[in-house]
Length: 467
Image 1 (tube, rainbow, N blue to C red):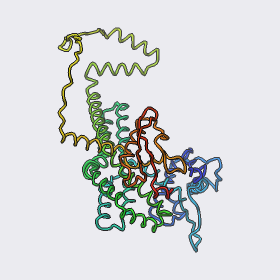
Image 2: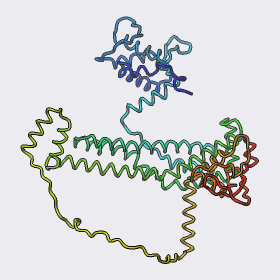
Image 3: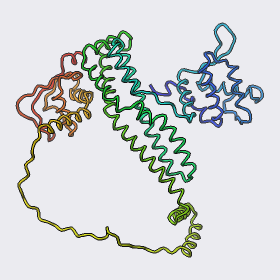
Image 4: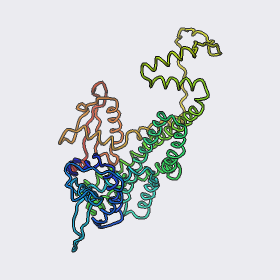
């Protein structure tokens, strides 16, 4: 559904008009009254708007119908009527009375909340999303299995919020780093670093690293979800619960959505470690650049380098005639010469070319223990990079419409990634969530430069019936 199929075309006009600041304040009053009052009386709302109109200029819009003189009360009523015309609110009468009330439209309520958050410069407290996900799944598996479906939905919601919070934190640090480059005042840099940035890290970054440690809980969460995915009993219980709650139309749709939800959570926690590492790097880089910029600005006026940098900065912002005048002054008072020096790094030996001699290769002693560890580590890395959901999507993409089997000679392999996915699909066939069978025959076929065995991949009967 498109945005302007829901909201009127002139819905955002109040935020782009000349009175946008007054309209914004009036909308924030509406948002505050909505939070604390069930029925918002029109007279009470007008009284609140009058309080913000003192000593402020309000200009009539082209289609405003002036009601009486432009008193504060008349302006407030015009503002309320403007919100009615643009689709922010409705006016009606309270049940069994003549008291006029206003009600925000359903689509306007989340936008009011968004505007309130954008206008609030304080940072929201970070909730323990990782621990909440872990504890919810653990309790459902241990004590309340009948609520396992609700625990999975809560885990998905917490995971989405965690993903959003981490990405917001990452780009928030980038925003502070951009501010370092443009800031030339030491006091403002100190204020940004020790007030604004510290506030953000204390409320978001440190809880993620300490109290709600991602690295501490991500492995147990993945383990519980894999156990759920491998248990037919758990899947049956969740599927029946979802259908009874009218969440989905039938059992097949419920099972598909449950598996997708589990794949999403597992996939996120397989990659969240890298995201946290990138945040750590950005945090360290910001701290280093901030300290260096503060040190530079505090010493720039006392060194020749700082004074030259200030002169060149001033020169870059001058007009052409002013530059010529400054250049003449610099030629008279500044003597610049090239200076060279000799140090230990200046002395070197020229590379001596040598002829390559063919010799027998050294024998590699194979250590069975280290070899097994290397294989286990390689399989673990492959599993992290190619989860079941990716393999299933790849296999589904191979079958033409209304076909349940395909031969290797008809499979299109366009790159190394497709070749790897085909190998993993053969190795991991039969696992839960991979409803197909690969029968390998004799001989090999060549597909786009890749050699694969002759085989037939067939969808399982359950998967074919679902389709």
